[in-house]
Length: 261
Image (tube, rainbow, N blue to C red; front, side):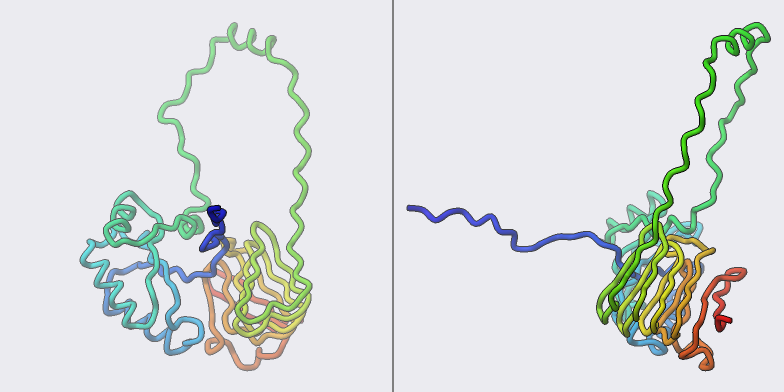
């Protein structure tokens, strides 16, 4: 009698939110980009050493050539990080990703492109003749009442400590953590983040580019804080804020930190 076939999967594939760094290239200077990244790694090795990085060439008029892109990847690897993908931009970027053998990630472009107006029609339609307009008005049914407002999405409530190596992501909403965020842990939210214990790990608010998002915590000892992609690591934070109740926000594109009154 033959053995029953084994349908057990050798590997389980899941998709989830990943706190991955995005390097938007504004000036294609390989030496300078590599030096800046090396400095970041030296200042915060626990955060950046061998960290995966997405390369975003959306700040350039045209993406680099394949040879130049490979030279940049080599430079960044020598600086201590691991370029893992390209951020989606144009068809040229897609072709470059294929040539480099790297995946293309779309979500990193969204925060740079929000707020663009919808395209307008090239020519305006002529208004109907008066009689036709009157006939249309008579035939038009009475307007329906506006639909009721959609229910407000409640924030995500985390009641247990977020421990080292764990990640909690509140998609399209705020995140409230009732306890602590340990060193090596990460909390992300598309909205605000409220932490009623100690923040010892990383907190990233406005993860999809919401510059109005804020971070509030009762005891500030963060490895990294970020709002809409602008970040500071512990070495950049004034020592007199450590251990205090602190809020973090953006003001004219600059990340601000202050003690909560």
